[in-house]
Length: 284
Image (tube, rainbow, N blue to C red; front, side, top):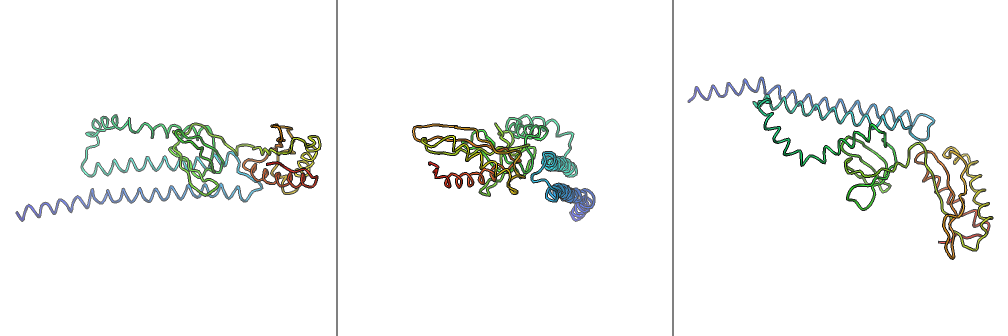
């Protein structure tokens, strides 16, 4: 009995010195590699952000946004592969025959395939989102999600093959599975447009109102603070809507990507002040 106990203890010690030690080293290696890959990713993205902040550009270029998103995706894919390989090696050292698990794994994979369809759909959708450059890190997007009554809107903070993470204007983080994205409206790609509808009384002099709005657009384009955000001079489109007692006159301005909200707010203030000086009141 004592001999059997000593033999068992000896076998356990030998296993811990060989396979047990290798398992520990594999797990530690995976953890260290994960931290190293994350460090490299953060360094790359930080360099991209520093290049944007230190340059003369007011907005990120499409290439910079794509490189930022690509760095996140590549890191995610590499870490997933490493974790799978390390998991297989750990199972092998625990005594599981990997080749013997092929048949059961095929059956299990077929069974899980029905439940994993959504995950596969998310990954495929994420692949096309990245390769087609539909949006990238820092873009302001509006996303229609399957089964959701309201659209998800915010700034893209993270993109992987499976999910897209947004942060809205209230600071809330929204996570959207890529496979459930039905429609994407990119509000900050290449250029944007600020549209201002000015409601005035139906009895107001349309010609004079148009002249005032045109003057506001000209002065805004000459303003040293607003001109860098504008691609051209704001224009007056004319009457957009007409009712018995009110009409809406639309004014539009092409802006740098993502700057349409700032420009729109400033133009509304200037329009309200200009109409008030002329004795023309906006209706509500």
